[in-house]
Length: 208
Image (cartoon, rainbow, N blue to C red; front, side, top):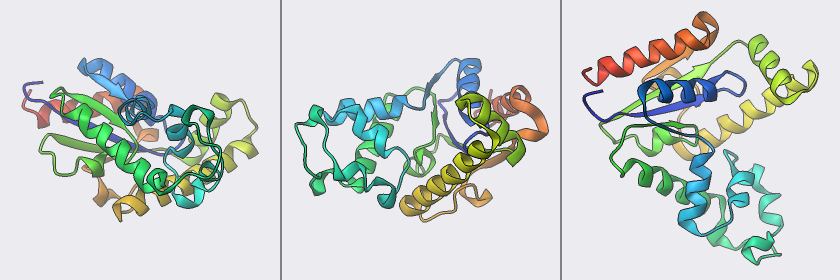
């Protein structure tokens, strides 16, 4: 790549988006941040990683449990104060994303509204990865070793949570074509060919 590029990947649960992000980063020779974003946010904020793990891509309604208990790592056993509201955690996570980008290197960022956080960055290319319900249910069942019915329910809940989270913080439609530069259905090409397509788009866009 001749220029730095910041690639963000939104994805449906079970779509293969995480694996695609990792494979794309490897092919391009750049770093990939997924759960690593949570670790970075925890490191910069001084909070324990468990807080960010529990709050990961959930709105305030999904955080009721998180904020009703304490973690010994924080020395807190009562409900969190306003400083640890879900908005505060999102801000800390967003700061971690910007900190990674400020290093000046190309990278791949998966989820966590990174496309919105970096919306004004001229080096940004945003993707959304989706797949058929059948393929996703199968992938979820295999990965989590659950039955089809449970996998389907996990998919439904994850979709609802991620859509609400994205809408809450961006006021845009999660998975909507207008919210991203490119939206790709993995079921048409498969994981490997989807990675190749994305790599071609990135290289073309950045002048390689």
